[in-house]
Image (cartoon, rainbow, N blue to C red; front, side, top):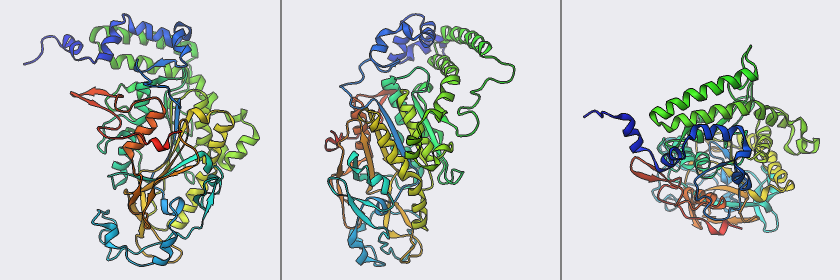
Amino acid sequence: MQSQNPIRDQELIETRRHFFGKAAGGLGSAALASLCNENLFAESKSNNSISQGIPDLPHFAPKAKRVIYLFMSGAPSQLDMWDYKPKMVDWYDKDLPESVRNGQRITTMTSGQARFPIAPSIFKFNQHGKHGAWVSELLPHTAGIVDDLAVIKTVNTEAINHDPAITYIQTGSQLPGRPSTGAWLSYGLGSLNQNLPTFVVLHSTVNGGFGGQALYARLWGAGFLSTRHQGVSLRSNGDPVLYLSNPAGVSGDLRRKMLDQLAEFNQASYDEVGDPEIQSRIAQYEMAYRMQTSVPELTDISDESDKTLEMYGPEVKTPGTFAANCLLARRLAERGVRFTQVFIRQWDQHGNLPNDIRRQCGIIDQPCAALIKDLKQRGMLDDTLVVWGGEFGRTIYCQGGLTKTNYGRDHHPRCFTKWMAGGGIQPGIVHGETDDFSYNVTEKPVHIHDLNATMLHCLGINHERLTFKHQGRDFRLTDVHGNVVNDLLA
């Protein structure tokens, strides 16, 4: 039976958060006024937060205020970068023992191979830092900052193909439609700044293009949360955000008048139908107006010293490169952006791995190390959490033809390496161990839900309490799983 009062129905199904928002009286005007005049909310400023999130967050004193997530899309080989397996030299071209694989599923790309020959890494490893962490020759700059890192060798996931695996680690589910990590933080903790988005996404070019597996907007989407929490993707060419510049004939004053009138129309619509997305739209228009000034200032690196630019490497002055994005991530952190996601693709090395991984490591090694050093020398590493890694790892056995100098590796979700640094993380440690084939975890496994739970813990969040009711169920980033890895905490 069709409802006779759809407006009343909308009011009845509003969430508690939306109800209290409306009950405040004149929310639209108050929200718009607060965006225009930061002095109206002295309490928010005293808490170092311009836009509050959920009232009871953080749940406890946080070590980190913000996150920079360096995501290596395509899955870098832990065997050639971090997980040193010297015994494999004697196993060259021998078949992977069935007792090691133990019936574990493999992808369709290698399931038809007649055999699974062992491909030892051709790269040299050396011990670095106070605790002698093994690091590949591919990462000389990162080896120099290993005492600032917690290297986690035992991250694991159930997903075995790229898109579900990336969706899984970014949203807590292999199925699309859930909020991304940055959206959860925006919803839960609110913003630390007034003139930039809470959640920013940077895409890095490789040899002038992107290539590799496609990255879909749902990876930085808000899912069933308000759209105001979704990530804003900055472009490297033209306006950093589409339509950021005023069109010909439109002045700043005229744009301001247009927005004021549009806000009045939107507020009238909200008063009539009570749709909370209308309030999101008002806030987004206001943020876009502020970004016309803040984003050009953000992307202008002329105020950076020559010493800083040299630290990030020769590509730092080329917009869109990984080096430029790492520097931009630091500038975003300085300006109070809560979550910055830096993507770089082309790690999907099923063949010709030695040549391709040399190129990729040459692109990311110096900027990664520079970011950690830069944050540290500015006193920001203590409250900035940096995470590095991909969606899964690579197999010890070769995909395709195997020679002494060339090989490929298939997807391997059973164990792979990530590192974390800064805000609340124990520096200079190597966590967990894998078997001689880097195929199975033997000590201290860390599931991706555990990784996300630990990241939220550093931000003062009990991952079991950061929830949102949707379709009759409480959802969270870690789904119904996850444990904080206390050994990683400072």
